[in-house]
Image (cartoon, rainbow, N blue to C red; front, side, top):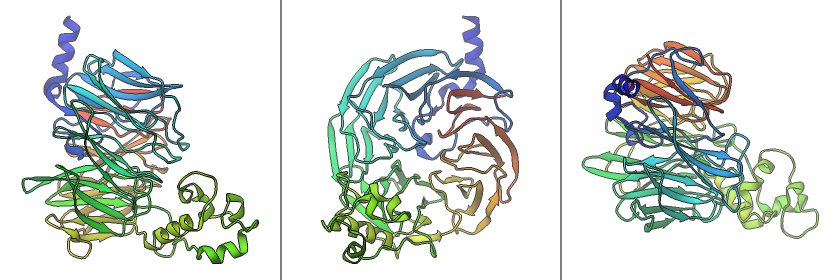
Length: 466
């Protein structure tokens, strides 16, 4: 009892703080209180660590509880830990009929849970949505078919009032789904047939007394009414496959997307199907197999072209991908509120087209927007104007960056897939305070609550603090 009391005192004000969803409070990736130390690692400032099965979901925190998901083959698991010491409080397992395919860096436990302090909501592409109370008792279950995509599910559920919202973009049958968080019943569903695969988590942009649902998609960024899913506005010129999530600050919305084939000078050019098939359709059946397409960026995207996954690409499927390569764009966008319809020409305040992240979401913090590009290239912009404070600066921590950037106090944290967490001093110049090395992959976005940082690596969950 004395130990538990002392631990609760050590948590301090953080015990009343939360990191309730992907990228924390309001999905903005900024801690509401406390600032972790700059230096931490397996042998430095460790408060506790626990072994976990594989999973790319990020930890979420409410009070003294931490929630994560994992894939302990062949079962999908929801895990609840005591935030004070990392001890297991409960663990619930589910066995899907079939586990969805994933790419080499993903797992079937990629979406981050969401919690409102009463229930925790978990989403598995292989199974659907399940809600548990804080004691681990299942409250409801909503089975859903696995998305039609070979990379696995990446988008996390978010809460908006009484709604639990899912972005289910996929190669065929994309849609938004809003569920009643108390029952799992559908409140509204919006079809998105023009969109292909996407891995972005939606964002609720609150401004001027309203909240609108922002959802990145292939070629377009769109806003929807939370009440019924009605479309409010659209911005064109984004990438083919969005992976990062938007954020907001200083009265603006910030969204970034990058993918192969969208940069000037590096566009992928596809000839018309009839012209290509004349030279490559070996059996003259009007369809293309992977073997009939020469090696290169077009053949590499065969699974994306093959929308119904029947092993061949038809003329219609080919032309759809060709049009996407023609229209795609890569950019960091700042958008002002108040638009309706197509606002590409009227409400984009500033735009950056170089040094763009692939997966890591941007961070707004203290009047600045931060991004990190694969290779460990970090940039910082004035939020209101887009003026670069610095751009393409090397962190000396190369590799890919899949975790989102997070911040607490005057520190900014960037975790690489190679397992290096760089800590920056927030400001107009690049100042690296620490490079903390873990020796194994970090895909999950850290959570920061009450001066502690909770970091998931490939095999461990760590709690660090002073």
